[in-house]
Image (cartoon, rainbow, N blue to C red; front, top):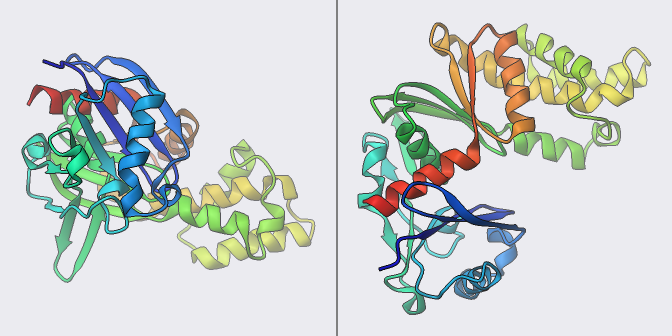
Amino acid sequence: MNKNIVGIDWGTSNRRAYLIDQSGACLAEHEDGQGMLAVGGRDQFGASLAGLLDAMQLPADVPVIMSGMVGSASGWQEVDYLDASVPLTQLPQHLAAVTDPAWAGRATIVPGYVYRNGASSDVMRGEETQLLGAVALGHRDGWLVLPGTHSKWVLLRDGVIQSFATYMTGELFSMLSKGGTLSSMMGGDSADADGFATGLNQAARNEPLSNSLFRVRAGVVSRAAPAQQAAATVSGLLIGAEFAAAARAAEGQGIAVIGSPALAARYALAAQHFGLNCTVLDPHAVYCTAISQFLKA
């Protein structure tokens, strides 16, 4: 019997795959640009997955578990969200089998979560798998922050989601960089320490974000601020806006950040600026641990 499993984090733009054993050790990994938008339609996901396994030189019978946008309405097949009250440790009991006959019995999709608060709701796809890994590593309580295109602030109690909120931080930064009045100024280093601190300071004053963003442009064109710091200032404003909105709830508890080293470093700086203790978790280790939980179930 096959004791290994392939875990695939299938996002909108990118795809990351890991061959995992029962201990959570990563035996092989692969990353490419074949995210949901690049696949070319729902009927092409099977061929795309076959190409991935071939590229990793893996046997056709290896089980595959996929998370992320592959389970969205625009993905391979839509998988219903779980209610936030379902414990993360029960995710292995809620996998959706891929209905494509060529992959029946071999490929499954992890459902996302929906959090409802009165008339409002929030959703996640992909982050739930990282949360399961964090819980398996002992982070069962408190605030977990998952920065990215759509950053998540998630409150856990004994491995159960109590609430979460999404911030379009990465998407807004990308949009401002590619078009609009700020785009011509966004070529500098977005991690510039002085520029990032400037953005955090402005965000901490809870000034209107749209006004603060325009003042980045005003500072450059009036020669009051260096153009090379504009990208970092915008990054500080957007990340700082997250903290200004969410940090008060985490006072006295701190946060654990699951993110790439560069992005997690910025969130750690922001946490320090807003007076929060911050622990950084390696996203690869967290994801591989999560996939091992499915293998053990």
